[in-house]
Length: 300
Image (cartoon, rainbow, N blue to C red; front, side, top):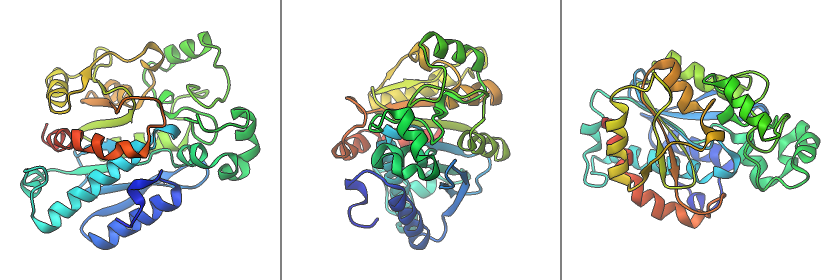
């Protein structure tokens, strides 16, 4: 990857440049947008294999949690290099691991939110004044998309319950975080992810957030029986804890929708520990700790 990509927060210009560089360096990878954000930024995906029935990895759902974007770019690049060279990754034969398997990585679902968090209201283009008003002029804690909708509260799984919890917390209109909109899948980013998962019949999904060193794997009666064992393997490989989510984050998330509607395993993985946004210096130690888990997760 070009110099400096992993040592600074991932602005959209760098995300585009990284996507182009990976496509040029590794022509066998499928690089494509699953859709566009509110402000027209591409939501890039990187596919290895036939895409159908693959394992899906999603990061950059929340603006401040951009370290997950760098984490998934790092994993993507290492996978592609290992495939191209035939060299093992963490002592694992990647080509053999990927035989008859597909992997799709979406490092940044919310490019507008990440850009707003990093570069302020002016990066919201025609919505700059709206973002300035909603944020009170400080976007350093911005998690939502450009319309002030928290994407991880915008999925169709317990959505009415999520709205009740929001209202009880006094969140009744667009906000920097935790406002789920007026209807599930109202946002182009959440719709694009839902459409991609259903079209390509994704086998299992891993959603990366920060922070807490925790893994969530349950959602209601449709949690697959094998999810608990899968979660235990992920926890053992990473040293992260298996916990139930905070009540305000217990409905309308991507993991919740994937389990509830597709009846397949999905996991939220909260990387690192500290206060968001985690510093970019944490990328390498977090990645080193999670690499084995990331590779094992392909096989589950």
